[in-house]
Length: 142
Image (cartoon, rainbow, N blue to C red):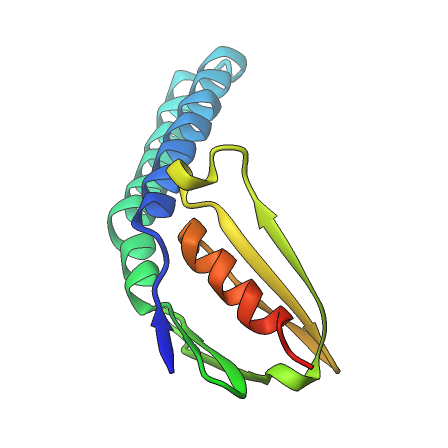
């Protein structure tokens, strides 16, 4: 049995992307909205939402995610407000998809999608080495 956690670099990457998108959105709002009061209110709402996501929700989510791989099954536990527990038998995996970003060793954006009978399981924000190891364990079944 082996336990895996999401890569913390994925959290940093998400924070950077959130900052860039929110800054662009604030610039667009300030350029196109004629009323200064409405623009300031929208800017404050966007800034508050992004700060909540960056400083509270995303760190709690990353801390809650845990993947466990045994000889017979893959287990995913996650969730901040609502806890999710998903277990998939390795023998029920029909096929899998490995998604990796161009600089995945630096960004932590590595994903594995397992398609099983009746659904799918997503393993998100894995370290590159963990992604390779899990896909090899799941793909090496008979």
